[in-house]
Length: 237
Image 1 (spheres, one colour):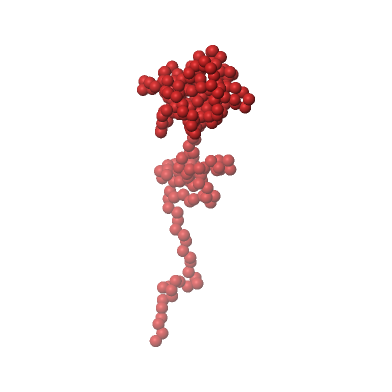
Image 2: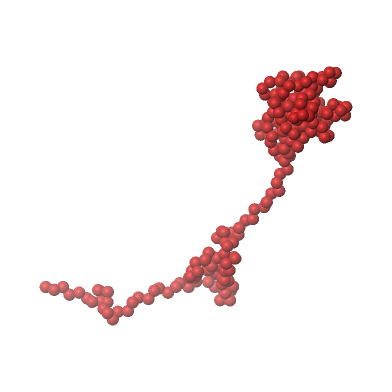
């Protein structure tokens, strides 16, 4: 026996009408076709307005056309770009450092001409004890001062690690004999403090400060004061 079905339950006949899409709810706003973040946010701001607001107040929230120049600055959807303030570069001082005994000392690198290995030093008769003699540096005779002895810290024993730091003071070249050379480094001026009372090995007048680095202390020398007698008496050729 054939089964008879109701045509109305089979989705309607050819004369049936298609269902209309549901009407937009009051207060809802359709997204702009442009898809731009600025347009979307502007429309979202309009949707947040109370439904009781007048049409005139809603018109204020209508997004203005977004220019190409403005789009390039839309870095964040939720906040304006934060401008980073450029900090002024911190003042620094360049030092050439070396060791006398177990302490590390530093002098202004602009005074240093070069650092050389210890060569033959020719003694000078009747010279002060701190002057070890003279050397021939590419045809120029310069005096060599035992900086360790000058500061009352003992004598430098020439060896593989010993070096001569050639400095220029008052247009004169002077060689400073030291236990060993360390390095040339840049030190922030903010890390340099006056010499503390704990530095008693040498005369405090010869020290212009102490650089406090994370891993060590560097005692800054005032070579003009240390060698004032030699420079005044013409001991530096």
